[in-house]
Each structure stands twice: as C-alpha cells, then as structure tokens.
Image (cartoon, rainbow, N blue to C red; front, side):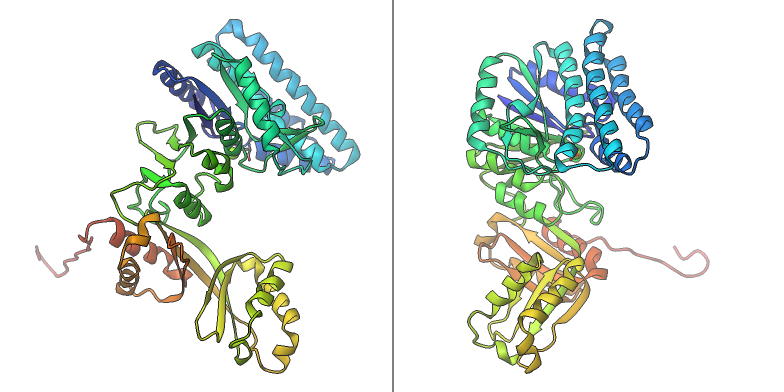
Length: 477
Ligand code: ASP
Ligand code: MG
C-alpha cells in the first residue's frame, strides 16, 4: 500500500487536479493499492483565517465565502461527469451551509474560540477531499471519502493538537480493514478529540496526517506530492546551480528542513521514521523528475555534503568576562534564563578558554535575551566579572549537512577555503559531534556569495565559471 499526499497547490485548480488524477491512475495501473491524503485547495486555509478575523470584527464574509464555494463548484463542473454532479454539489453545499452558520455565530458574538477556529478551518480539507473522493471514484473506481476526525484522535489543544497514537492507529487500521480494495481519500490536517470536537494538527499538518496513516497501515512508501522537485542542494532562489537531491537520510532531511528547506516539516515525519517507511518527495507539476527519496540511510555517491542550507537573518550575542572562566553552572544559568524568556537559541559556540560564549538567535529575540542576561547576572555585571553582552546584528548562518561527513577528512578545510577564496569572513563556527552539520555564521551581505562559492566547490567540478571581458576601441576582437 502506498500513501499519496497531495499539497494545496496540487489540488488548487481543476487543471492541477486533472494531473493528480492521472498520477493516481498510473499508480493504480502499476498494481499499487493506494490511499490519498489531501490538503485544502491552495490558499483556502489562509482565506478561512482571514474570514475569521473579519467575522470577529463584525465585517461581512459572504462574498469571500461564495468565491470559495464557486472555486470548488468549478472543479465539479469541469472534471466530474454530469451524472455525478448532484451528489458532489450536495456534499459541498452542506459544508458551506455549516460554514455560513458558524460565521454568523462568530459575527454575532464578536469573538472566536480556538475550538471554533479549528471547526472553521476543518472545512478546507473537508471540501477538497470530498471533491477528490468523487473524482478518484470516477477515475479509478472505489474511491471513498474518509473524514480523519473518525480516524485520528487528539487532546483538546486546539490549533496544534497532540495525537493519541495508540487509539488512532487502531481506528485507522480498522477503517482500512473495512474498506479493503477501495482507495480512501483522507482529509489531511484535521482530527478530533475523543469527545468528537474538531481539532487541527498545526499549519501544514497534512504531511503529518500522511505519516500517521502510513505508519498505522505500515505502508511501503509515503509519497509527498508538492510543487518543487524535492530537496535541493541549496535554496534555488539564492544559488542558481542548485539541483535536486535523489536520496537523503531522515536525519539529513531533518537538518536541512531546520535550516529552511520548506519541503516538509520534520516532526511530521516521526511516525514514518519510527517504522522506517521511505518518504518520497515528488513534484506534481514535473512528475518525470525523480524527486527525493528519504529513508533510513543516506545515499552513496555524490558529495558527502548533501545540502547547504541557510538562515538569512540572525543576531549574535556574545557574553564574556573573567567571571566565567572555570565557573561550573555558568552556561546552565545563561541558557535557563534564556529559556524562561522563551528565547530559542539557534547555535552556540564556546572557546575552551571559557572566556566567552557566543550564541545565535532570531532578531526578534534580542530584546528578551538581553533582559534575561541582565536579570540573571545582575551582580556579575555590576561587579565587572561579566562584560555587557555584545550584540552583532545582520548575520546569517550557512550550514553544510551530510550524514557521511563523519568519515571524511578535510571537508571543513574545503568549506573554509572556498569561503576564504571568495573573501567571506567567518564570524563563528559550530559543529556538533554528530558531525551531521557544520554551521558557520557570516555577515548577511555575504550570504549569496558564500552559498554560491561553497556550492560550487562542493557540488560542481573544479571548473569555475569566469567572466571574460574584452575592451578597447575599434575592432578589438
Ligand atoms: N491546509 C492546511 C494548511 O494550509 C494544512 C496543510 O496544507 O497541510 O496549513
Ligand atoms: Mg498547505
């Protein structure tokens, strides 16, 4: 059994959905039994959130609601045969009536609870999947709509509920047993409490749904169909020569995503990782591209560094002073104080002289971090044992990620000399002893240059592109 998950852009229009149906039919012809998990049509969740805000403010939402309804109806008219129109339109109409009633209630109250907000958001996935179930049934036969609220049970932490894995697994398995031989089309993103209240799994939660389903039925593969060619060696907006990676280990994918590769959200993979189920990232709009296969082991061949990732905006704080040398518990106090202010520390370096600790945080965390330090070390600061924290803004992090880096010598050297040759100054360096990732802090204005030079030196042959200019007067050629 393969689980195919289609993201918002893959089900965003009749044209995109027609491609999806072809992909599903092809998999079926190859003899695979299938289950689908779909997101809401692209932009629908954001649209519903906007409408929620408008309704709270007492503004009308009817027009936007009609547009939403028409977007779904248009797909029915364009892709479903006439005899199937009525049942499909009817199920959609019921959902839109319910939404209308919910919005009326919110307008009347002028407020919305997290619980009601989840109810409203669930209609994005309900509508797209009901539609997809009718279409899959027409295309391949035996499509059945599955409302994940009956399959995935969570606590009542609305907006980002925590799943009860044991109970959900049991419910999913018995659903699949009952519907053996059909193609379930399952709503991504949404779930319910044991009492039946609708919850959601957090933004982008459909990947998580796919992983939960895949793990419960022990699928042979989970396919994430999206609108990019998979994980890339670097951000293609910054590095023109970036190309897609054919294979990654789970750990590499997690590291790359952490540093900004927005292909999948790593915690969503955990159920699949636990079971060792391969995850294949594919592009709905370029199915010929192999995409990226993520599994227990990293690919062999190619560069030992699988990808270069970056975080564009980072601030560095440096804490130093004579009072720190040899002080057990100093870093414990520092990072606990930061944690109490909910400052997320992205990277840490400490020289073995213990004279200074440097850490990287997001720019919005600078003020709370300062407060945390000033509060915790008031007396050390007053007595001069600790200098006032130094802030360096406008930095970026470049991270080289690869599971096989640990066996290799000289990779760090290669990295540093590439940067040195391009005149990029390295401000701080961190490498965990897992050796999965080497992270460098550089100035933000050097980011593009740094990424490109590191990418060239690691992934491309030593042949360098040079620009040659001839100048002179007359026919210089
Ligand atoms: N529709 C939800 C969102 O946009 C869930 C998903 O797309 O995975 O966040
Ligand atoms: Mg989405």
